[in-house]
Amino acid sequence: MRRRIREERASGKKMRGMTTSPSGRLFVIQLHRASHLHYDFRLEADGVLKSWSIPKGPSLNPSVKRLAIPVEDHPLSYADFEGLIPEGNYGAGIVMVWDRGTYLPVGTNDVGLALQEGELKLTLIGMKLKGSWSLVRINRRAWLLIKHRDSHASKKDITRLEPRSAASGRLLSQIADDEVCSAKKESSKQGSK
Ligand code: MN
Image (cartoon, rainbow, N blue to C red):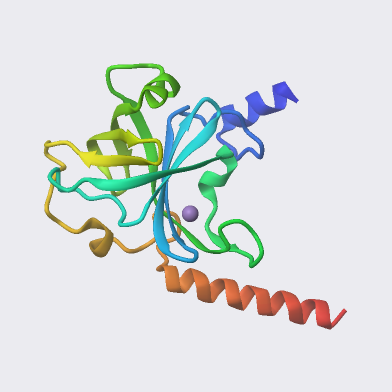
């Protein structure tokens, strides 16, 4: 099993139940329409995706601090998930991979410890988000995601200007439509059996 995982990692194949991504420093932001629309910001650390729910999404403007509510860790395999979470399940709704890439912690190699201590500086190397950022805990229930002043800082409204999936290019409404279509196909297939 261990050898198979090593081989799959070497060949860059997707792994179910993997314990680390090829980079070991994966980040993903999933746009999630559940009871409310929000952005789930996830960082690979200690073999899981540490996760925050950001109601307004990230801002490129260093003077705008975005509330990030810590939510439960997710398995690494969830980073690629885009589609429908069916009714009755945790987070039921539509999920889009809004941005993804890798990150570099700044000033530490121990991301888990930095998060325990309530402050992580990081460089994001995503398709949309780049440059230097901070995640800072302000109390038990709330963190802030803040863009640092650098060449990637901007007053552009990134969530409005870049509404499409980084994985599929689809809008959230298209993902929802595709899911309804495939659910219909599936049920008609079952009906004809
Ligand atoms: Mn969510």
